[in-house]
Length: 167
Image (tube, rainbow, N blue to C red; front, side):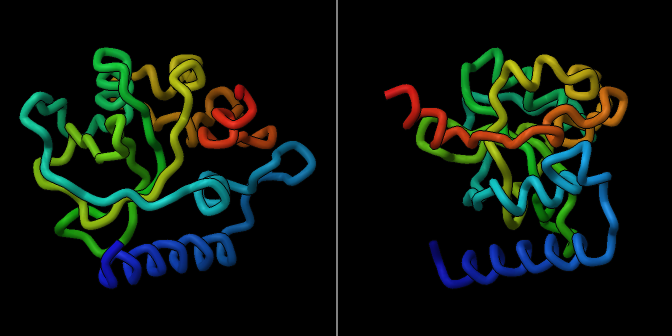
């Protein structure tokens, strides 16, 4: 990771921490996480931006959760949800993308790669179970308010830990 990438990761983590200080979040007796920001801060990791590989086609604009779910299923790659910083914006936004087998970002929604991606691999079965992620203009798994944020209710086991426990 380059020095600039390291500074960007620090900036996105700092933004998440300051957000959590300012916003009360969900009731702690019902949830393991206060918010999607808390979830991503605890389990997220940075991903290096890259141009869209030619084997993938662009998806619909402003439909990152739907595009990424479709892409993950069709190409059998991993769905990631978290925060990313678009080229023309300074503030991280809730976003979804995929990663290839070698952890390269595959973002079919934005016309230019973001400056930074910071997120969590979400198993596709959890994505498919989410009301919001299935909708074309939905909010994704981490903001599935119609179903009362199921992914935030219990402690989450990140992908790397899931692989270790299967060995």
